[in-house]
Image (cartoon, rainbow, N blue to C red):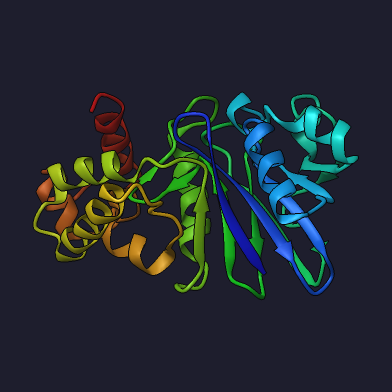
Length: 253
C-alpha cells in the first residue's frame, strides 16, 4: 500500500492511497480538488474511491469535482449520508469494507462531529483519523460530548502500537507547545518535540505518527496516567474529568 500526503488549503492533509497490486486508488478527505488532480495527472493515476471521515468542508470540498472528472465512488458514514456530497457507499460502524486487497474496518468515533468515522486498514496497520486524533492532539468538540470524544480516542489507542496514524491537519508543532506547557518533564514528549521542530524547519510533514509514540507523548491519551493527574492537581479525579480539563485548556491555548 503506497500512501502519498497531499497538502491542501493552509494546513490540511489529503491522502492518495494506492494498492499497486490491484491498481485500486483512493483519495482520503479531499478538501480541494486541484492539488489532488495535479498529483493524479503527474503519476498517471485514476482514482476509484473517495473516503470521507466526516462532513466538514475542509474534508469534502473536492468531492463533487473529483466525482465529475473521474466517476469515483464516494464512501462515508451512513448516518452522515445527508451531509457527504455525492455519497455512493454508505458504511456502518464496525463494518468491514474491501479496498483492493485490503480489509478496512470502519470505526464510528463521534466527538468532533456526531458522524465522524475513521478507516483502519487491518493488515497494513494504518488508520486515517480525520480530525479526531492528531499527532500530539485531538480535535475540537463541535457536535459530540467530551465523554464521546474520550471513548473514541480510547478505541483508537487500543489498536496495535505499531499502527501508523494519518490525520487531517498539520497541527503538530502547536500541539507540541501545548503538551510541553503541562507535561514538560515527559522525556518522550521532549524527544518528539525535537523531531517535530526539525521536520517543520525543513517544511516536511510530521505525519505519519504511530500509536506507541502518541501513548507516550500525547497529553490527550495520557489522561488516565497518575503522573499527569498530579501535574494538573487532579490526582484522584476520574479520567473523564481530566480529559475535559485538558481539552478546555487547549480550546483557549
